[in-house]
Length: 281
Ligand SMILES: CC(C)(COP(=O)(O)OP(=O)(O)OC[C@H]1O[C@@H](n2cnc3c(N)ncnc32)[C@H](O)[C@@H]1OP(=O)(O)O)[C@@H](O)C(=O)NCCC(=O)NCCSC(=O)C[C@H](O)C(=O)O
Ligand SMILES: [Mg+2]
Image (cartoon, rainbow, N blue to C red; front, side, top):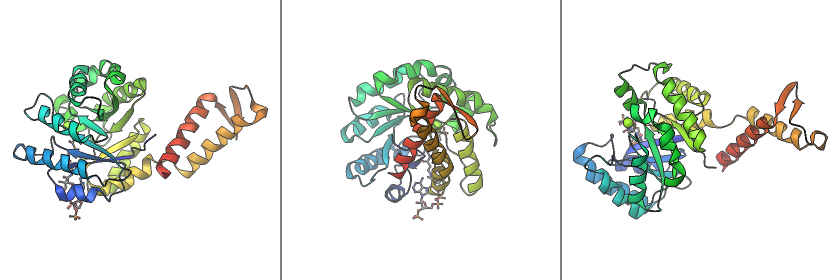
């Protein structure tokens, strides 16, 4: 299990940001070739992303390149260039059908995993078909794109993100159906870290595994919120130990510290312990 509490985007046109990312405490680095890069810098950004992947130095961090869409004038060349250097994953923007995953897999060969941005109305509605193609195409992560989705829906999310909630639930459920990870979208607020933390807590409560980020200051709140707390780890250990007790052998439901605990809670507890171990490295 890889921790994906904090996934930091940066424009691949920004060499200073890429260099800085090698020393930041994020779990994932995403070198962006798409919307953070202006059309006149697309080739430069591609060259710099390829050079950065080749050079390495990102340590334990998962390294992901977000390509331009295959329907854009840069997408095919992006995938051809990325295929040669093999980052951990390629993030595809605005995935609206499983066909996009198949085309990308064909272009990349047996190389990096695929991550898909879900940020169009069609992508939300057709998510079941998209995740049905996960195993065949190596799709490993769904990423919410709240800015593009809100633009297409013409909605105004606000702090409670209520207009996006049905789409978010659909995304998380489809990721779970396919046994893959789900990352929350970016919070555009940079200077108000209480706001960032609140949005991380929302994402955790809604089932996300971590959050995509746009600024180094957002890493600490995301890491804190998406790491199991000491209390959660202690409770998970208690549950696992209770089911391991020979006195409870063969039982599906037991009483632990005044609460009913079932085998499904032991599964959750094991997951919590696995995340905690992955975070601890
Ligand atoms: C948003 C920014 C343009 C803000 O830039 P700026 O005001 O210049 O930042 P700071 O001066 O506060 O920077 C302080 C130092 O941190 C480094 N820095 C800043 N951002 C990053 C970063 N993302 N990664 C690594 N390092 C970063 C600066 O270089 C400064 O370092 P130093 O020189 O040592 O002082 C900027 O933060 C930015 O460009 N962010 C990323 C934008 C991006 O990638 N956007 C695309 C992804 S989000 C998206 O696409 C939405 C999605 O698709 C959807 O639909 O919702
Ligand atoms: Mg987007």
